[in-house]
Length: 460
Image (cartoon, one colour):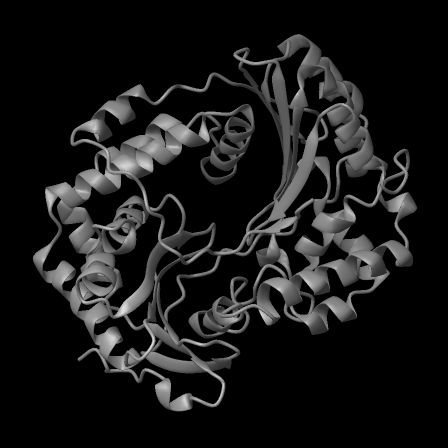
């Protein structure tokens, strides 16, 4: 079973183009997600969404804790706890959590991001009481069985995951390197979700227990249930299993950091065991659901979202000087960042390829985007929204996402409207506004090839 980390994927997504005018149709067809939302006396938020189209149900639990709630020197705790939560609790022996769910056809998993940790399982509607009981038992009764052995086992698992996903994979340390430069040392986004080897090694049982007591409490969590169930029965089960769990301590004020800024253009280099260099650009932008967030998403798509995008068409198709290119707006609770990456083809000068990238960004900022480009970008994002609602698991997670960021689980129509109503002038403006600011320029070069580093100003 994969326990995923909320990492940033820098590759472009290639999609089939939708016909013009589809954006307005899709936005208008975006379904309301009727929900019942209530809060237990202990502070647990509960979101119910009925969908009787198939006899399936999903339980999705979000804890309002991610790597941004950690402290320098104690990073990686949120993700470490994602793993620890599968090690059994007072009434669930080690290994039985997965075994009991899989025996009834349910599939459990979890993930961690900078801003939250979630746990989810989906299966037959008849498994709903078991799913809820298991989640409640580890929320309310994990610490009595917490041990040094369990911590050591999962610490080693996470360390191995770090080796496989960061340290021993080509370009794996690029994002971590960018974060350290893009954000000040004490900024909660300046370290990766998985944490550092040193901090993972330093984590004590007392540290981990304290972290659980503070953040893994009903008043810091929400549960969404989506699928084929009877609301009255679900309410009764949630109240029965979760209602007796005591509130945790008052949550410490979550950091609300002033907008971070790179003081000056900063070029850095990372030598890695790679065959080809790769160049990354990173700018500070807008946090999730900021008025500019959707336009920045669309900008990323126009630049490198499909085979007709500006950078893909010129670099990969026309000039054939790059083998891959990507762009993405990454939006979090505290801040946002915009990233572009390009991998030149063998024999191509990284600085020459970088100049073309910066030419295209400048051309877009000064000349704007076409309505055809806007149509493709809008259609794609709205199609992705519809696809996310195609399963009860997708609905349960989407409800949690909106509840967390905007306080309203059924926000999908308003979210769709952000993209459907975005104009070409909005995309041009955010390109001028954000991509003209100081940036981080990282070149990952093959070991022993520092001369391949792209220097700041190479695009001028």
